[in-house]
Image (cartoon, rainbow, N blue to C red; front, side, top):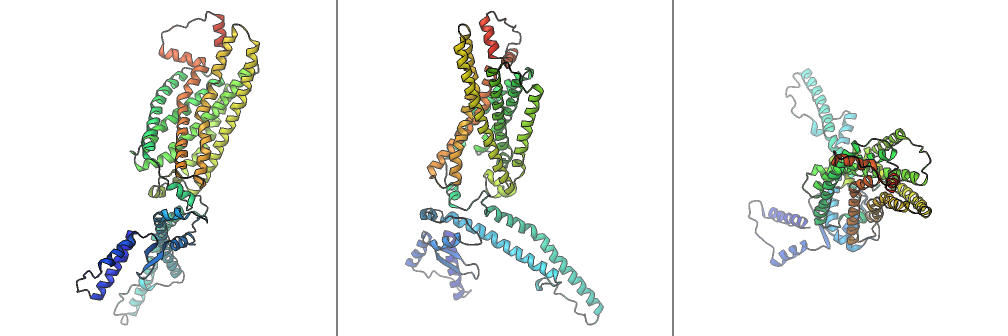
Length: 526
């Protein structure tokens, strides 16, 4: 508003100076009351003062009419719903003004470039040279040497045509760049990140406390990074010493690889969220690091589902031969990795990095229109993966619980303690799954609703954002809790740990039958 008033004042002063003459000294000719009135205009939100499109005039317009005119302007086609709260429009005047100016300037520049190109292409098509592109300095002795004059005119025409083509080729990339900017600022299908509607604007205008996002979450992820690197280094070492003698071990090794890749992404998230990284790091996180994080998270979910099925078969159907041998388990694991990789790869390569780096820092802004569509498909597939595996866990562990309950009723005496031990260990997988993955996928539902529908106020939106980020941290915590599954469910893994920490210790023979039975039933799958 101050800028427009200043332009208005400068125009008035310029006109006074022109009337008095260029040689006269301009003196202040406004009274104190008039100056005060001009000053009051700066804080008046009921009017809008703007320069006219042509002629250098100043337009004073009612602000409500200005915003209503802008919202229904066919040039912008802004998708603002009817019945918008007037208070929201009043609070957003300045932001909308900046949006209109940016889009208007870009559209005006695009029209100028297009008109210039269309004009020159038409001139080339009809073999006409515009007056401003003709070479005016013609030979003065044309009547004396007509042949020379004719050749000069041929050169003139050819040079003018080549210059016109040069102008077309030179400004075409600029035209494409401006056109891409307008398309980026506004997409008719609302598929681009910057959506001109009250819902998106209200979400973007809702500020959050930076001390949580820049201090608390980086500290939490730093804790996971240190613990995760330490534990997974030991786990990788132990599994290198563990032979692939069962499907269960193969599935566990795949989870170790997924957890290790996930932990590597924590470092980039910590640097970026702390605000100490370069701007280019944001592009890397959106296109690579975040994709790898979710890619490995759903890999872990899939293999936890396979482990659950394997546990169900060993507990409920202990004498039934598995339909999947070790080679089949390896092929299945490779197929899962390849499928998830090709599902995630387009999210890395279908990007619009250059434009996003210039205008925004949201991850959705780094994706092209096709990239956003593919991202939506990926999210849907990942949701299906989670809910299917959640159903597998609930069904399998319900049947396992039922089997163990009746088994405990049948077994008496010395084996009761062994069965209680199985009850404790067998629920580690579902416990880790519910702690790490279930809260995030339930919290994501209202958070997504808050980003796509104008149903929550600013404080609720912030709360949902913090809940979503907190539950996402629980997903990352899975990389530190999975070693508990390895330790309590796999005897071979424990033996490998003994070799690492007690390389000179001898094997202790089992002396009691009950203890031998406990280890046998506890680790039959390893």
